[in-house]
Amino acid sequence: MFDFKYFTPTKVVFGKNTESKVAELIKEFGGTKVLIHYGGGSVVRSGLLKRVTDTLDAAGISYVSLGGAVPNPHLGLVYEGIELCKKENVDFLLAVGGGSAIDSAKAIGYGLANEGDVWDFYDYKRKAEGCVPLGVILTIAATGSEMSDSSVITKEEGLVKRGYSSDFGRPKFAIMNPELTMTLPDYQTACGCTDIMMHTMERYFTQGGNMEITDALAEGLLRTVKKNAVILRDDPKNYEARAEVMWAGSLAHNGLTGCGNDGGDWMTHKLEHELGGLYDVAHGAGLAAIWGTWARYVYKNCLPRFKKFALNVMEVENTGTDEEIALRGIEALEDFYRSINMPTNLRELGVNPTEEELALMAKKCAVGVGGEMGSARVLNEADMLAIYKASV
Ligand code: NZQ
Ligand code: ZN
Image (tube, rainbow, N blue to C red):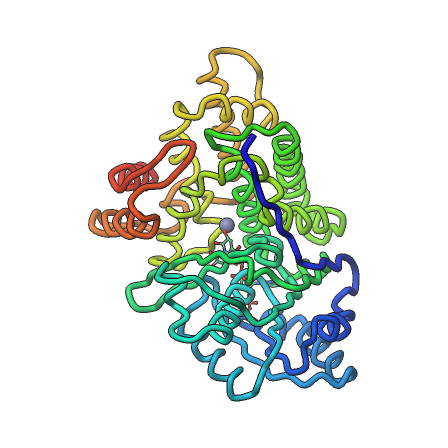
């Protein structure tokens, strides 16, 4: 077992109608002038934004609004948000939406609290020394950004998608009402379930750790999301299933399912980030499209974990060699992806890269990870290219 730090300062307020608590939570964390940051308009159409502004009006909290955070959120809007907040003397950020709005708000917070170009943090040039306090009203269970230390931003020039992680960016509070996720398109619900599972799987397929309690939490979370993803496919308004998945999304990425391991593998995410940057695909779908190929490329180097996953999560038959069991587990997860209409290769994802684009993604991915990365198996640029090629 490895030593670890577990830091989850986010106050979670979970359940029906919890968005009505937003004003008192902002006050609790000292906010006096708020930027409400949201995405492409789902929160306008659902009436959530109006309910939030009504609540702030009633509490006498002043605010400005900035929508337009797209999936794979752009740096340009982050700069716009920073300027707006400076002009308006904003001291608290409220993201209303999914990972994209939250990540964009975190970037605005870094830009406000630090001098210089905020992209420097995403470009690994320097570290942030603070972030303006941030609260979240979550509308999609997926990234776990409502409790995580990460923010992922795409720089339009060169389509560079990069993540930056810092404890300063962890939200002060997260309001999670599972009912708010009921307006999601089925595809986004399935993308979210895939992403949630991947956040725990990235921490599970490693060479280190193997802490019994962490494995039990991880395997239980994976089984729960797998089961409830299918329930939501057939019954999208099922409150209990929405709630299970929503809480799983936070636990999958707040560090809990990685305590005592070696920090995780994360190569499926890194490979997907290039797909998201170049083709603007939904993050969860991109992960599903690449995972099977990655798994077949690395499983022999991490056989005990793949066997354990096959038996304890995918519940495959315990017969044959370890390799056969591991492969059966990989196939079973791909079957599950197909069952919730997720892609299992790039063609099904709807992208058809040229040889040059495959090489470009491998190169950018290698640069993004500083040459090589991975725990299940360390991958370099040639490995990344081989995986991209095999996943077409
Ligand atoms: O933009 P709007 O109009 O709100 O529509 C969104 C968007 O089209 C829609 N949506 C969200 N809630 C809805 C809804 N539609 C109807 N009803 C609702 N209740 O769903 C679409 C996807 O939203 P988005 O915020 O982009 O999804 P997600 O939460 O999956 O975020 C994806 C981004 O987060 C990054 C991804 O790479 C991607 O850029 N990630 C962030 C992480 C983090 N900060 O910890 C970790 C992840 O691994 C990931 O990389
Ligand atoms: Zn993810």
